[in-house]
Length: 320
Image (cartoon, rainbow, N blue to C red; front, side, top):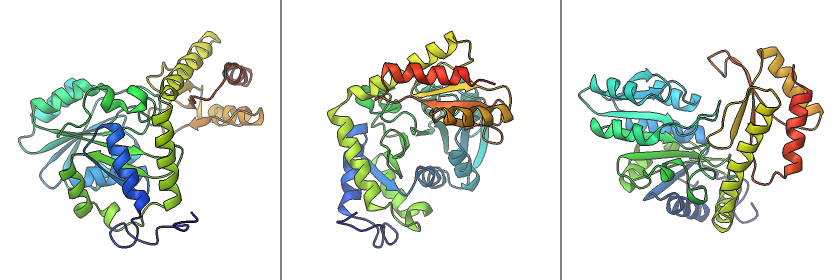
């Protein structure tokens, strides 16, 4: 902030790009195993950019039913036609792609933000390749948690660096900063620079946020054990919550979802937890279309055994 100021002052193409942005893009691409990266002001903007720029008129977008709102909005804004398919269902993807003779792309989260379950990326990629379709995945909840040293779900699935795979990510989850990024082949990133409206017309990410994300990324490189520890904490939370009689979804990454009896109970439960010194998220309609309200816990690598035990105790004591 002292070196570059409080904000980027304008679009990345005008005055909004600093050395920090390009350093972050270079190191993020290298860490995740992709040829290039492009940083945006938010993960939401990154998803809008990737979907709209890669799905022109005449193309088909196949969208997983469990996708994040930013991917859904990207589908709505894109000029291609969208077909929503069943959650984490490769066969449904194949059937959708088989109905379209032109260009197509599958859009999916890697780890779904509500329940914390992982997409079958290997099977998704195989379905796409059978039909010559591209794959765009949002790794918001995979980066920093999955893959060797936290390099992300695509890296873990052997898809990093593939010329038919594009990955979006947020800098506000495991990296604890703000902003988003798109990673993929250099030709795709160049296309986004020239075609993605949320890059061309939006003010660039604040330099301090870019610097914070870069520092966090370098810390993750130095301490790769943090990713495995976050997964361990998530599994420990799940085991203790279910042992206490609570309905928790088995985590595939760091998100642990605990079912609540109703929206009203979920809101009150989260408030009671906070009053007892435990901060948890609360998901209720319209955020969750299936009508099942939840508490959402996010496992952290720095939680001690005593803190895990206390968290489970508070959640159990305050249950509706």
